[in-house]
Image (cartoon, rainbow, N blue to C red; front, side):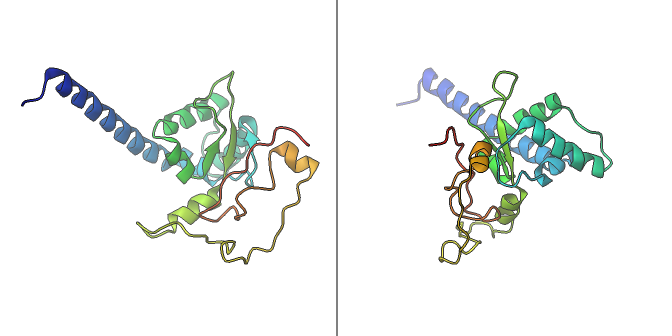
Length: 181
């Protein structure tokens, strides 16, 4: 009752794929921890969807303030692609959220949210602890109501952004609005 050659090959392919994924996650963590990665993760788009060009302006301001060379759009796209190989959850833990595109390029330019407050909130959680509301919304203490305006809908904000503040562990990016009703 030994294993067949096909089963052994299948197991090796699965092991190799798992090892590649783990290596990609480690590389993504290192890229996020680089000077460039820290500059990107420190930028904020105030929990709003922005174009890659707008995010690039914010990143270049951070790089210039840190006396580092400014980047270009292809450089930012390359960094996002390399970090994205580690999985979307690695980007999200760093406070970087992208539109539904799997890859970045000329034809499918993504929209981005850069939210360092979310990354800080996740970083302050003790290891192994369950995610809990840190803004008071779960206890009914959140009093601020969001009124959708034409400008906010045009920017992509909607009234349902999860109801949590942008620096809460349970915050979720707003859904992309497509049209006014």
